[in-house]
Length: 175
Image (cartoon, rainbow, N blue to C red; front, side):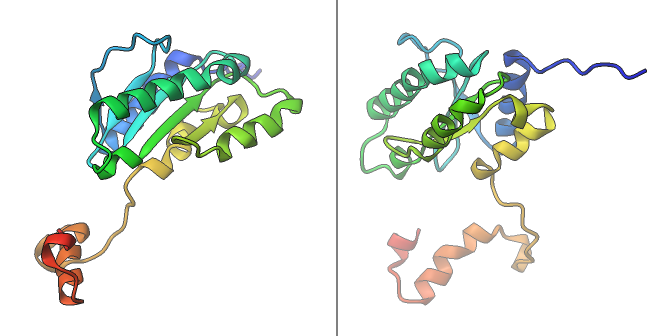
């Protein structure tokens, strides 16, 4: 006799995604949300900002993603000068344990391909049947795990300014 697997819920997805981001080097930014996007959580690292919004159903996600996006854009506009590179690296993660109706496949692809204002990562029920899949969905946001031997155990990115300077790039620009 097999035990039926309970579908994941929004709370489980939120916790799993937050754990993946935190383990990937992000920190959670404690910012109040007063614009109708309750439950949105904001994470940042040295390079970008991620807004995590989890909806109970696909219908709710489809109806409310633009509010989450507006909240992220407003936050970035209010707190990051345009010349700050991080101001151009906003990601909106939209997750739902709800199943995608077959006739909404086009809407899902359009949303995933919409890079207007911020990039989006979108996943629904079938893609998120197991918590382990959350990490796979968020891979584009995580640092590459490469095993590269460097002199004195240096981190590869720390060597880049020297390599660029050796190639004639101004050291200040390279840094």
